[in-house]
Image (cartoon, rainbow, N blue to C red; front, side, top):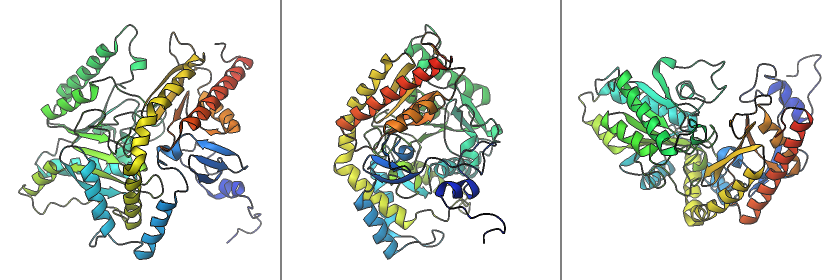
Length: 464
């Protein structure tokens, strides 16, 4: 019912400002904000509310891996919904979820052969953490619950998963389970101490973890959680050998290694999972979401080591219940879409992504010729353009921390969506992108950054 005396909102923008509470708002505009409207998508492109055709640089949110308007995925959604739209996972099951669990287990490294399905990345990480807690309770180790995360990390928005986050501003006004979490330094080679080699920086990070385990005690640390590539923290690729060394320390101290592959799985680095194929590690658990359905349906999950499951079965607490589940766990429509998405990835898209990734990285690297750009870094089909006040100090733009938004605004006018992160721009296009489309994307970014430099000079914020 429309409130008496209040005029009816007519446009989408007006409706949003009155009724739609957007994610990650600031207090000054909460509940009164309209963001850029996207009307439709096709392949690597989307169309905004003004009819402009834009390259979808972030692939939605790292997720539209096979591109927009894929008829096969849309058809599977319809067919499964008409066959079975929902079943309760509490005391029934469906065929697509069992088939998908087997397919995912076949791609997972080591003995990771059991899958718990969730609704997205946050709930996947939350599930992994709760399983760790349950596992240690059943094993009679109720104090082994601390979680090690890292500066610059992003692991979700639910209470436990958000407590692991280490990005600037994420926790300024939000509470978390701080007593359960300890954070290590961000493994960002670009920000290593001046004069230090990358190898020495890696060794310093590894020693920091060893010292942390010794200081807190291995009997109190339950898990290390890390993204193989820190995505929302700025596409931080750790030094070579860092992740295997962290994995070894976890094994030595009976600490579960949880690889958060919400972004890096399902093709972003050219493989279904990147942990072993790219980084040479076999985690105890892998979390995933996003690309598992290419964003066509909310789905996530955790792949869990069979050894952990077997250990639970052998315990003397057969009645101990893992009291955790979601109304939409193992959703039949989502699992059916994920099965077809895996078909598409396996039948050429993974191969294409792996083949075109070097060209993607090479072309983006040319942006370092611009004085505002401190570094372009990345792996596979994910990259970050980091802007700095000056290359010598490598400091972010102290007077204009929203430089990423400025670049995004210019790029939007020119035909490209960018994901701005303070002074950084993140790119992670659909895996089906071509060489010509990469050229278009880089040309627009070059022009968008150039226009931003002109703006900053004119406003006296930066002289380059």
